[in-house]
Image (cartoon, rainbow, N blue to C red):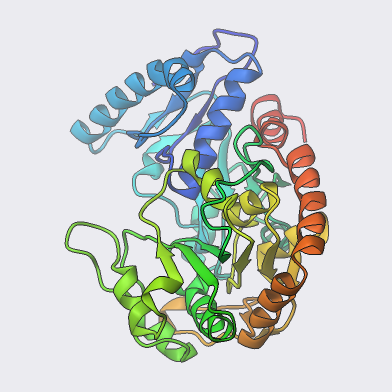
Length: 403
């Protein structure tokens, strides 16, 4: 299947599922929106997987619905013709994770160029992975950590194109004032060992014992069960959340089991990106003691853009948030213990529970100064890290061949 040029803007395609709740899904939606802003014809943007979009602004949905109508037809074609490979005469973006693995079915979609958008967490490159890498004409890295790693492998041209935030949504604004009597700490990211929810919980338990007005807001839902063996190695929590009968995880019973009082936390359900600003603006701080991020951590960037005092672990992709933007850093990074299934946790970092508590205490004691500093960070994020400008750089590389 070919695609001819129908406008001055070259066509482009995305082979992963576009959605409003996952990191890659939001990434794809924002690439699509910027393609349209730069004058691209909607019929020249190819989506090869059935989208999973339930919450986007109505006018945006009206603009992009025709694209998704065609995506449904491509999805059906691939399902009914399992041996067919679709080849396009323009750039196709693919997901690329550890050892160059990607999303199911993307090997049946080929582009010119074939572009790997990398979010690599485990720095491993087997002969099998190197063979997969040969299928890509170029690589897009979303953090300096990933860019340096890909360049060290000499697998092809590597372009650093950071991800961003939607500044029309994520920017400083008044909160609801419904929690003015509480000190609200936000923690986001799907519940898994890499995201460090056990570190957050252990630190908050100590902090709440000192400050009963503290409230932990968690946005941790995950469709996949977490690896209990990995959390057991860290030794900071008792078990992991069970799978819920319908879908997701039973976070509340797990937090109670860790010893947190019922009124000390709010367990949010799956929350669409469109609704997250209202959550973040009610928070006094955000903390992300993640063990690893292949990218820069979109949720942390969104908190920063809203003017929330934010601390991240100083490791892997999150270093960019500290070095390039100036958010708070959890600098004590110990070696991470890993299970055999992880292969390697090179460059990962184990944030210190006591330093995480100290960060909470710092903001609690100096809320005015912390907020002032956070607003300066927010100004940098909203001015320089908006999806539009950053994805324009990506599209210049992929569509226009300009580095």
